[in-house]
Image (cartoon, rainbow, N blue to C red; front, side, top):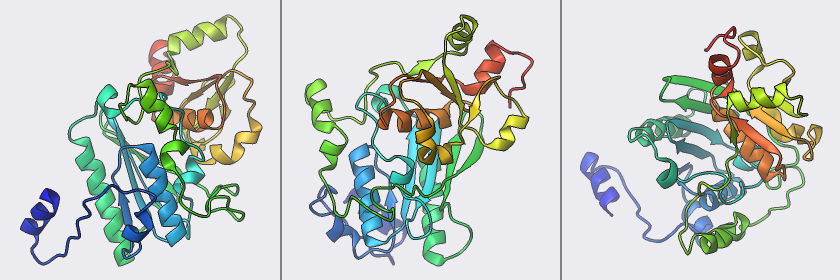
Length: 302
């Protein structure tokens, strides 16, 4: 009600409908059906998957935003014209993989930055102007003040927007995301994740592994043009937007390290791989830029 009152103070000519109830599988279709677009400002995986599935089933665009520490992401998932959230993340990450904002912290202005981008995308979609972020994932790094884009493709095996969907209605998203088990492990506290296992590897530790001749697979999730700037010898290119459809090319029994420019995209890749059952995988902390600073100083930092 306070948000509704504030919006009406700013513009008394608008209509604001406030729903004083949680957004759940029981009411999501009823709440979302009258509206043309959904803007996802949630901070937990069950509601993200719920929002996505509601939008796919109702044929509505889902304006997505996510923040973590100094990084933010935004996209428009619209199954009629491009991929949905499940195309990028078919399964949620295991509980404990992704630290919550309470554990990891977040730059105070970051929600405003990503929220404004989401508002811009919503206006563009409603007015039918410009080029919305359908089929593109925007990556924002506040520390470097950089914006990057990753092209996304529809996953032909997507369980909800693919040609042979398995998800045809709303499900128990808490159970789907492992929230009951997480609540029990945390003594009843429901968070998006916890510190848990360390899924990162430093550049120096990776160099030591390579120096000892350990067998591991280096997966570069950057875009092809970035190879012209810098590369790690022996790495294989799997752009993030193609990773979901190329999972059969990877062996879950083999040790892998994923990396990108600074570690943001590869963290997403790590989530996708772990969700798909890969356990012998690490994320190169700081990305190839950390490798350039700590291991191979002949490479440029970009």
